[in-house]
Image 1 (tube, rainbow, N blue to C red):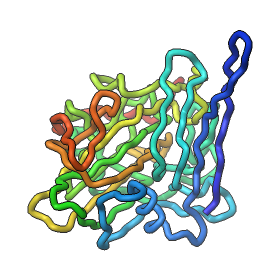
Image 2 (image 1 turned 120 degrees about the vertical axis):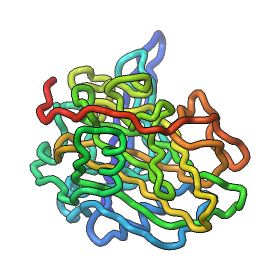
Image 3 (image 1 turned 90 degrees about the horizontal axis):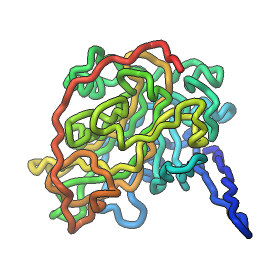
Length: 319
């Protein structure tokens, strides 16, 4: 693996002193002779005791870097994600260490100078990993005008839970995209547990910040704002996603996936980590700032996860 350290220092001045605050994320790119399945699965599990035992079914789809050009890698492990705003009034976005899956370039820059960051920005062809039937079915069920997916990047595996009282799994994630804010549909991200996608908000919408009640969960970083030093033009706050386990199964499956929707351009990515077994009444996406994080003994507030329609994104990005 190749490590890419991305770090910036924000200087804060005041009367009598100057302080600094680091903004950084470290990317450990999946490339060369790496074992992507093992490394990404180990990377997404909560360190210490996740309460999850992997039993088989490991699978990974994504472009592995060639070991020469870091931009060829589509996936990475990440650590120290801490996005500090350059402008006042905006939140600092952080997340526990985990894995980074993208629809294009895993070597994400700590700049925001490209109006449509993707493989074209770094002079490469798109990953060419193809579409995904599960993601296409999610889009179709949501009523999207197109269910075409491309450049898929995912991991999946079978598992059991160590505590029989655990009826769910949870993780924390930050989703970002260079399609914000001018595309009708952002690239699809899914958290599929025992065949059901739980990467949905309480109103049933997919992970999209374009419009609706969930817009407040996302932060504007459009080109020209200078809000954050990360290439994506918009990204979510840190969110919890909870997936319910099928009580009729003793061995469970999980798939964490992202892909381009309708086309092969404009990158999106998800930083996700802390996957653990837990207890919950219902599944879906929750804001950890307003809802306690799931644990082995606490249940989450009820969520509703029903699909709703959305509109297809435009091919030409205008800023």
